[in-house]
Length: 92
Image (cartoon, rainbow, N blue to C red; front, side):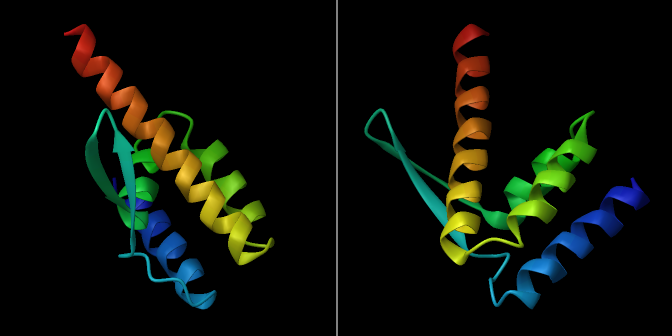
């Protein structure tokens, strides 16, 4: 757990170094309902995954790209989390 906290702090600092606020959020409209996720929440969720190293590798690569690429990365990763969460709720 401590390792993941360190990784979360490192990811947040990397965003701050690019002048991106980790507390900023993205809104997703799904089934006429708006869901909001912060960048920090997206990072944190993926760091809890069994294969979190894969996320960290992608995150590090995308930070070398443009701001638009970073934005698109977080939009897609958040959407994937949200869709997975909603489909799990639908099944149960």
